[in-house]
Image (cartoon, rainbow, N blue to C red; front, side, top):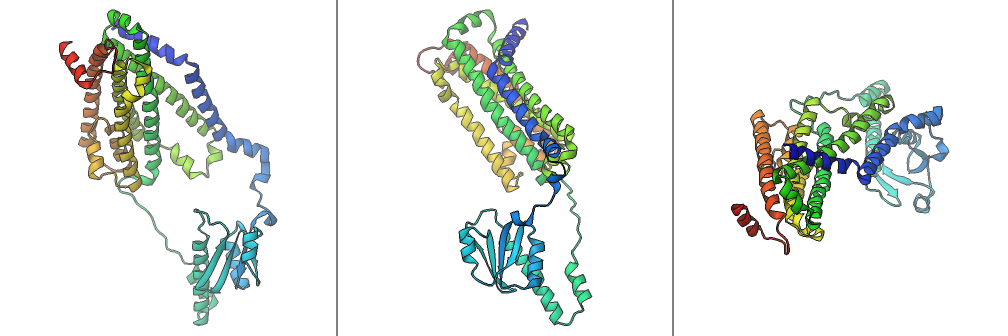
Length: 408
């Protein structure tokens, strides 16, 4: 046990004293501070001018051809970001020349042409114009039918009231939590897993590994290295996300109107606990694999090729989960199967917990399989580590490694 703690302390000290590690952490914290303190700083610098309406002359121009004063009033109310002008002549030239952002040619209240120079993929003005003209047409039809003006106004102003009651989970709200967890796991596994493999290969290529193996047990070395990388990664994540939470709470009043920020920083405690469990187990199961594979590489140049199969397995699981999230069908057969496969369950089962309602026994079974696989792969990785560090020359084949394991 003493060997394990010595290796753990040595490896962890190497991570925490690494200038790149510390620099990246500080950089991310500073960026989060700039973003989350921005509304406070902008309010202090801008004062009351920040809330003042934009002058009409500085707004983009929307030309309206074929309409009357009632249509102009309706369009001005529906498009407050534009300065709407009535135009009797050509509206195409001003749009192509850049004098107007867009134009609407009315053939009637049920037919129009929307003109814009470059149509943005986010431009929904045509749909909004259709809604305005629908209201104007209904208003005109009711007036022609002899309906009193007061009754017309009441009918046009009537809107249905409704409540949305979710008996399970709100997928739209939990989507952000799920995506953040999966993306963070993706980055940490690829970054720190590669780092574990590289450190092992470096020690092996420098022949320092031969001395270490004779003075410490391979199990202690493997678990010490992997656990140190895990603690370093979790430390970095806690610093980044903890500072984000702190900065947000300090500026919560300035983000009060931002629903997205509210969703991001209002995660349920139960979901946070699940995130921690799956994150830790998911990280270690891949870190052990990367460490074992790193011990079989004789040169640093072989690392990327050696770890490619593991990386591809992880990326495939990541893509399956992302497609499942995007489709909203997180309980499809493929996602359910991935919930019990150790290499994909950290992402798949957490996604199902966040965006669906799996049974309690499914969650317990998934966590049990994942934890048992983590321990089993850790022990196997230690054995591969013991054999792999002594294999030099050409890259050993999988069959050679298993033969060596049987003799060990």
